Amino acid sequence: MTLETRLREQICNCGASLFRRGLTFGSSGNISVSLPDGGWLMTPTNASLGELDPAKLAKICVAGNHVSGDKPTKEAFLHRVMYTRRRSCQAVVHLHSTHSVAVSCLHGIDEHDCLPPITAYYVMRVGRLPLVPYHPPGDESLALAVDKLAGDHHAVLLANHGPVVAGTSLDQAMFAIEELEETAKLFLMLRGTAIRTLTPDQVSDLRARFAT
Image 1 (cartoon, rainbow, N blue to C red):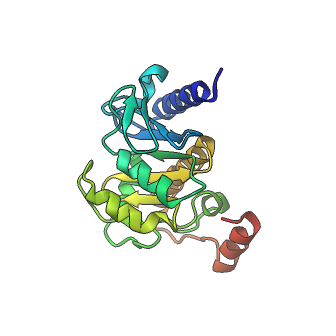
Image 2: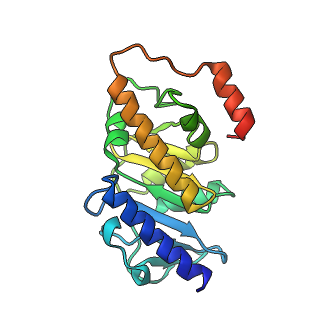
């Protein structure tokens, strides 16, 4: 089995896992992985992540041209921005997961860091989460907005839309976006109560220990 074949199967397995657990719905969300030649595999447009076909995944060459498979997600530019700005990026996951989207719709959240450091694993896997101002889905103006943040943040939250997370592997991107969704859920559950978050010193210690 070639590396590309394994990556195709991994994307489909991850998509099915996200769909089964209610982290994606209908044809929302998209996944990509980097190929050794500098190109990418991406989920197709208007495809359910729960029913992906390895052979139909879109293949994009290093020049950004669609070379095989079904037409790539219309939000492919979000993925390309992350790969361009983050040299360690090997995979990108974008979801419309319910609790993260809910946070992205709240008035008055900190646009520089949308979620407080509730847990150590959120700090370790996500870190700071800036809010990207609203742009229509599929509009390349969104790519310009994400481009301004991607160099400093491997995870961003699109206003009234959902999270985009880059990782050094597909597993790492999945772990991070799942941690983000669970932290968003906790944040919404705890709204209106006094929250004991990690202190600045505790956050700094975690970042130093785990190089986040």
